[in-house]
Amino acid sequence: MTEQERAETFLHEHSGLFFCGACLVRDLDIPEANRRDLLWRLRTLPAYEMHVGQCVRCRRGKRVVRHVGGVCVPWLTGAVVALLVGNKAGTSLCDACVAFTTECSLADVRHVLDTLTPFAEFRRSEAMCAVCCGIKKVTEARVDGRAPCATGGPRYRGWHIKMLSYRLTSGRWRPLVVMKAPRGGDTPDAASLIQVWVPETLAGDFRKVW
Image (tube, rainbow, N blue to C red):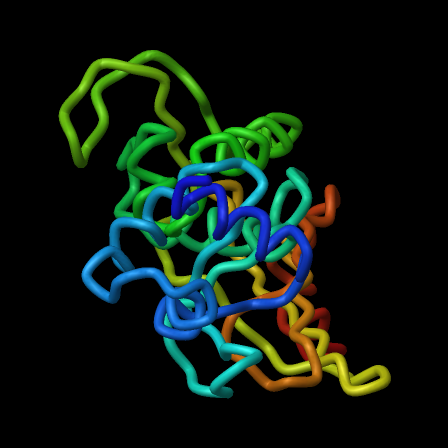
């Protein structure tokens, strides 16, 4: 069994739990020199998620990986939306560059981008990527160019619910609901766009609710 196969088996047996590279190679008796290559190979698989978080073994905050069963990682919607709307107006990014920036698999990123198609502010087309300059399918967010407006919200059983609104070119606001787990990490653990808009005149009052 190869080192990657051993790592996949181990993470599958501990599905849902995050392990850092140091603890993973130590538990599996894999040479330390192979740690980085192993993590990045796992990251490309659709059943695995890697980002900065807390390792269940050493409890330290660092780059960690886990098996997620081949489903789209829940926090990625918020990360992708924040990346797209936070760019300069007219900036188009290909799927691969979005995946590289968010440190998630290409398959997961494409799934998220497909879920954004009902929202008029996200335009997917064949054009040049602003990062890699390749001619391929790219995504552009048509917003007014301001940074997303993050507002605090209520807590439910330790979960912190926040609203990450962004302004459309029409002057209306699109609310993005972000939920953070009780562990208090900075990475959104679940996020979803609400397919409604808020008039500019009501935006202030709306954000106060959150």
